[in-house]
Image (cartoon, rainbow, N blue to C red; front, side, top):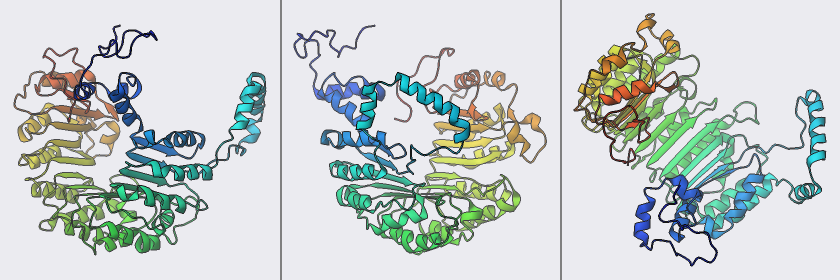
Length: 530
């Protein structure tokens, strides 16, 4: 196997520097790098020249993850980051500050494990050398406090961090993180553009008390979890409205993207009611995910927030699936009625470019979906219909609804049945979409539908044969994703479908597809989506 033209063919120490290296301007090398996989640039081509070294270092260190469950690994990373040559490349820092397990603690099943542990100890005595033992003793496992101290010492070197993710969902309240927060805000906090916070509500107290200065933050993500170290959620509602809410409102004039997810057994209605009292003048994207019946017992605040932000809102994700069994009318109906109320409001979300929504299994929720599509037909670029498997008539209605959406490029939905009737209809009604994502119902899904005729669910038996006789020459589709039962459908079916759509060159969003069985010529080698 020959080496690439830019790699020297000799490893002789006496070879002069650059002897077999092509002398090219940096701009040319940058262009060459565009055609090399990131994995090769990151791991294999550092020695080519200084520019490739710089690119490789940027790829390797642009995102750094610090996890404290095992403190040894994070300490090694932090020691490396003390070097400004490395630290300056970090753009996205992820801190998963989890509970540190005591390695010396005995497991609960100690009695049952005793014979195994004796064998393990004997094995170690026989095969571990004295040198190894001395090495282990020289480097005891760092404590959580030592890791945090090392992180604090490193923060001044982070000169180019733009996004920070702090997740401490299972961190006991005994850990004091206020010095860390203060160090972050004092060093790279003013440069942050994205702040992502996750954990129990109690954990937000120290963070907000550290008085973060975030003048450039444009994207804010909040994620609430249950407190594993405190029974009940007493006091959490007060923290939300008295601390977290005002913190969000202080950033309201500058936030463009806002996400709120909640997995906690906590009603956040008052939190949204507080936010709805203020203006978010440049909010373009809102993402809300929580159980409607548990977390939004009074959804009026969220509705008001949606109405007030409709003039600027371009992207909305509403995943408010109720808790408990799916498609339970008693829990689905309140959500479907609320969606209908929102859809009936004139001008509500009329400028959306992207809509990602669970419309419930109820008729009212489905009607609200169709109304929302019609209202946004002049601007809609992406439509994702979550978690409801559409019957053939419903899938046809969605296709009819998006027909006036001339700008629509991406359609994702779940259907109970895939056949050529649906494909024909989509090609006719949505000829301009470039990406299509379909999940097909399986037997388990069919059992939950409103009909008992499971024989018509899934992929039509003659679909592959029927699709081979069709040609969708005017369809602008470039990428197809089809799933069933949590996995990709048969490759032969995908290829048969691709043959009938000349413009398709990508499966499953990969930017390419296996083409061994296709008779058509390969498309240009252009990654999908670029």
